[in-house]
Each structure stands twice: as C-alpha cells, then as structure tokens.
Length: 493
Ligand code: MLC
Ligand code: AMP
Image (tube, rainbow, N blue to C red; front, side):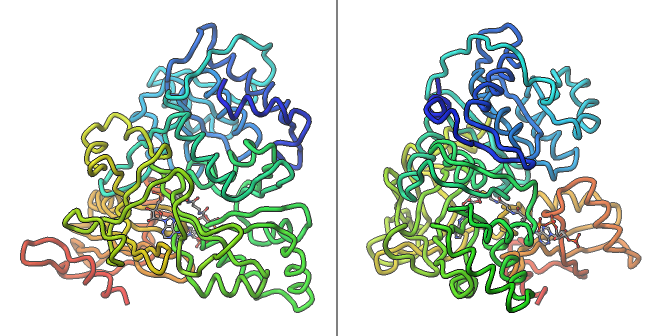
C-alpha cells in the first residue's frame, strides 16, 4: 500500500478534509477511496498505470478520487476546472486515458468526448458505497501522476511523477516546515498543480492534519478563515497576498485590527510559485507580524529551495536546498558558478525530480545536462543563500502563479482570420507578477479586441487570455529575423 494511504490508518478518527461545511475523517477517506477504487478496477486486479483523468472541484470527492486512482494502480491526471473543452480534450488525448471521472456539473461537457473516444465515464457521486475489494500492491517506482505544464514548446507537456517522487516531495517539506497532526491548513489553490496538490493537500494528509477547502479564492472568505482562530498554516502565490493586502487596506480601522489580531495565531505562512516582491513581504509583515517564508519549486521537481522555518527568512531570496535535494548553478559554458557568485541556471538532482515528460523521450532527454535537471531559471548564490534573477526564456510567462507559454497563445491567435502575425510577452505587473500582452499585425483596421477576447475564451482558460493588446505595422526583429521580445515588452510601457 502506498505510504500516504497506509499512514491514514493511524489517524482514522481525525478530520482529514473539510469541504462544503462538512468534516470527513481519515477513515471516511479510506473507505470512500476504497469504494471508488473498486469501481475503477471493475473486476480487474490492477489498473497497471492506466491513465484516469478526473474533473472534480477541490473537495472531499477530489481527494477520494485521487487516492482511489493510486490505490487501484492507475495514474492520476487531474484536469483544470477553469479550462475550456479544447484544453481538456488535449490532456485527454495526450494521455490516451481510458477512464474519466467527473462530478455531476461536468457530465454534459465531457460525455460526448468520452463517447467518441470510447472511454468509461464515471460520476464520482455514484461511486461512493461499493463494498471493499482487494486492491493491488503498488510499487514505489510506478508512475503515479501526470500534471500538465506549459513550457518552451507551444503545447503543454505531461510531467510524470512516481509514487517515490511524490513521497519524497512530501516528506522533505513535512520535515522542513515541521508539519504535525494538529495542523490545519486552508486550500484555495487549484488542484492540478504541485503547489495545491503536494505542498498543501498531501503534506497535510501525510501528517494526519486537516485540509480545509474553499472552492475558489475569495479575499473576504480567506480573511474570515485567517482571522477565525482555527488555521495554523497558509500557503499561496504572491498575487493572493497582494489581493489580501488590498482587502485589508480597504477595511475600517476596527476591522483591520480584528483581522491582524486573528492572523497572528497561525504558525507559518508561505509564498511561492512566483517571485515574492519585497514590498509585498514587508507590507504583509506589518499587517500580520508574519515574515512570509518564500520557497522555490517547479512541477518537474516539487520544491527545491526554501527559506528556513526557524532561522533566517531573507526578503528577495529563496533560501537553501531542502534536505536530500542537490542544486548547482551553471553558466552558458556549462561551468558550475555557485562558488563565484556569478549568475547561472538552477539545475537540480534528487529523488524529487520527475520521471519523464509523458511520451516525449526527446524533450525528457533535452531537459537534463549530465544527469542534472535544467530548470531554465537563473539565480545567484548571494551571501549564503540563493536569489532568483529571472528566467532564461522570454517565452515563459508567470501570471498569478500560473506558468503560461507565449508560443501557445501565439499559435492560437494566428488562427484568427484578422490576425496576420503576432507576438506575446509577459509585462511586469504589481498584482499578477506579469500579465499577458499581445502585439498584433492585423489584416485591417476593424479589429475589435473585445471580440478577440471572446473568441479566445472558447479556446483558452481566462488566465491565459491577453490583458493588453497593441497593433503594430511590424514586429521588432533582430538581424536574423527573430522577434526581439525584450524590445517588444518596452512597447507596452
Ligand atoms: C484572472 N484574471 C486575470 C488573471 N487571472 N487578469 C490578469 N492576469 C491573470 N493571470 C482576471 C479575470 O479575468 C477576472 O477579470 C478577474 O481577474 C478575477 O478572475 P478570477 O478567475 O476570479 O481570479 P481569481 O480567482 O482572483 O484568481 C487569482 C488567483 C489565481 C491568484 C487566485 O490566479 C490562482 O489560483 N493562482 C494560483 C495558480 C497556482 O496554483 N500556481 C501554482 C503552479 S505550481 P474580470 O474582468 O473578468 O473580472 C508551481 C510550482 C511552485 O508554480 O513553485 O509552486
Ligand atoms: P510551474 O512550471 O508552474 O511549476 O512553475 C515553476 C516556475 O515557477 C519556476 O520555474 C520558477 O520560474 C517559478 N517560481 C516558483 N517559485 C518561485 C519563487 N519563489 N521565485 C521566483 N520564481 C518562482
């Protein structure tokens, strides 16, 4: 039995999940995930790494489905609740999944696709009470999960992690941040990325702690919880802290005092998934007394660098490697520059590093240099700590903590009948980190940006849709004809 599930037996009567105002114990999680696993197996002994895609909002049902897939020997592929059909279809086709588990609200959207692809479509609400069947032994080195990440290619790639990867990613954080069974964390992050899945949900369950869900981020509701006296931990992307600060700023003096007094009771607040601006860290400290603990990670590696829980948390820095994770900084000539204080690409080695990009052996091989995973992020080692400087690719945008490929958006924009050519860049933004900007060369002058946005909404999730458009006669290019995106970014100022 996988360790995460085995450990749950010792916590059986404790609360594992709170969702929709209902508390669910570890025992209920074991029973319901066992029941769903029985339905998934449907008489077979082991799913043998069949891909099971699931579209279930953050909730007890989400967790029970994820555990069920693992317990039945399948690979869990969570879909994003914000994605339009073409993005969901891409993941379903790319994984060649044979089973689709959905909650009732997504049935109509996905059943035609399930039918054409001859997939089993299961409604999670109908899988909850099957008597327990024998479940397979699932070895640690088997594939457990595929998460899709945008990168330097136009189409997202499936990042495959094994049970061993996941277990290590969880354990290193549980130890570093001193999780225990009395912890209670609020999850407001999406559950198709490592931040929500590993750092929040799985660390809590591993520890016998409680993970409480809000279906989506809402500053007022989050503040209610933060000041409510139950939570011990909170983790979020910088944009969320920015929004919480804006809510606090707008409150009355009395309310500000109440919120600030309440949030002090937490034992740890963490920021990650994008650079935490120092002014946000400082403002949060004055509001809450907490110095946010900033850490650095990536879908392919879980978490790699972290400021200390007990000692120094240095603003603008991401700390040191987590136990068991090796980091080096490598310059353009392949030379290790950590000792010299020069900038270099962060490269990572350790049991946290993913197995492969799903069915992309070339992309997998290209992601390594001498056995080290190449992050594409540039850092320096400054006075005993790592500091991120940025990324080496202008085609990757981070907005609200989501990684977005400029190439993917360009590809889609070019399909619009009025767009001859285009280029997409990330524009620095205080709230979102970056926002997506698109420069268009159009066929005529009647282009309507609102119409383009509406058209894009059918094809892309909202967070990938450009917020700023400009029209140009020509795109800035270098002598080789390549669009100079650094120049283009300035055009948006
Ligand atoms: C939404 N909006 C945006 C936007 N996203 N505007 C600019 N840029 C964006 N990226 C707009 C919407 O169109 C809408 O506008 C308004 O903001 C509110 O939309 P929403 O969907 O309700 O937004 P909200 O719920 O407030 O979302 C903000 C957020 C979300 C920060 C909660 O972006 C989020 O959950 N981010 C976390 C992503 C994450 O988990 N990343 C981790 C990846 S793993 P209008 O005009 O329609 O009202 C990883 C590894 C690691 O990175 O290290 O952790
Ligand atoms: P993703 O591919 O969505 O997992 O995003 C991983 C990327 O997020 C990393 O490669 C970094 O570019 C970025 N990132 C994560 N944490 C931090 C951080 N603390 N500071 C700066 N960038 C970060």
